[in-house]
Length: 88
Length: 440
Image 1 (spheres, rainbow over the protein chains, first blue to last red):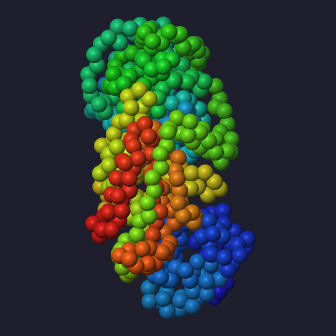
Image 2 (image 1 turned 180 degrees about the horizontal axis):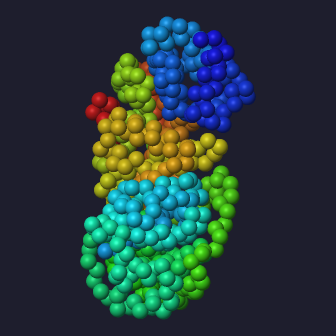
Image 3 (image 1 turned 90 degrees about the horizontal axis):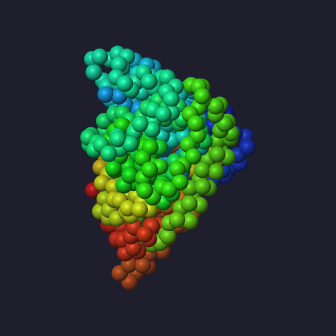
């Protein structure tokens, strides 16, 4: 998955969780929980939606790595070739 | 048997609601717990459940109409094979007509009658004029919060209950006395001893079409107003006391980590699920914090633990719907219930039973980074449990200083109902339960 795809995916997943969020207005290096007021339930829903959609299973200890927009994009772009294939 | 489906009281602060939509039509069979209508309140859009089995015989309120709590919204007939069969008794058809107001004054005899005590059965006492009168959104019945809760639970209309409280207010004991359905008992209020001044009862609305409901306006604004009113009342009426403790969560968090390891995201638990479960079980152990305060009758413990969960809404405000019987749910089930209720709270689709009956509430403000929170109790409840942020902090034990994940737990409780010692016992139970997460 390209970084652009990963970003578009994040925008789409967040629409189902916190529809009012506009990724363009969020600092890509600030953790989403504070930048977008995601709580732990929202974050778990994001992880779950990512898993359902792509098969990428982010373990708990990796949560901090996908907490920012930049981090999410990097993680998903890197993970998708192997992780996604494994899941299908 | 005829029953009435009433505008329920969905919280101590609710006076009226707007019927947005009917989910049933006359002739439909309904069962206890079915969603029959969608109602808009200051706080949220609520899916309203029915409290009895039966057949919808008549819908009385048009969508878009705002009516006071206790207004008859629909008639429900017995769920016999007779089905919709036009009820030929003296009651049902009359409801459709605009009966003369005199009909309601024929009641004093009914008042003396001892009612059959069938708890959940169809409340059959409302008559047409009352229903028409209730269409007026201005009608307001003085009643204690507990009385509202009890009346809503039992499907009783407050304005049909003789009030013996201050100024003729309906108190819990009155609801108890009213018990199950009985003929138009209510008129007794004006004749009932203490209530000297008859409440000016507006004449029945002339026709079946009620006055247009006032627009609800911006939800955020109305929610803010509802919170303002309820919290102001809480601080005005409830003498809060506060106790707090710091709980070592190293065992809890280690267990949680290993439990979640290897589970797909959908089956993972959040720390909140453990905190809520432990709170519910502590409430079971310390029943003096689980229940309702009534001005006249004092503290009324609740047997079930319906755990209110404060859910902050996007754009501001919060609601605190109940997770029913939270002490009896497994962690996985509680996690599912939490996920479900948070999502529906935020999308504005809570159910009436969730709004009406929390027996103790938990706020988990730690999510937002606060180290501790001293809550404001939701009347008529008597306690609010608060959790701060789970974080690594210095921890002294056995003469050594270490670093452990800890949480600051607090209880705000109603000093009329309990003393600080009770709050402390609750916290001790909470601590003990959280040290054995595998048994939660």
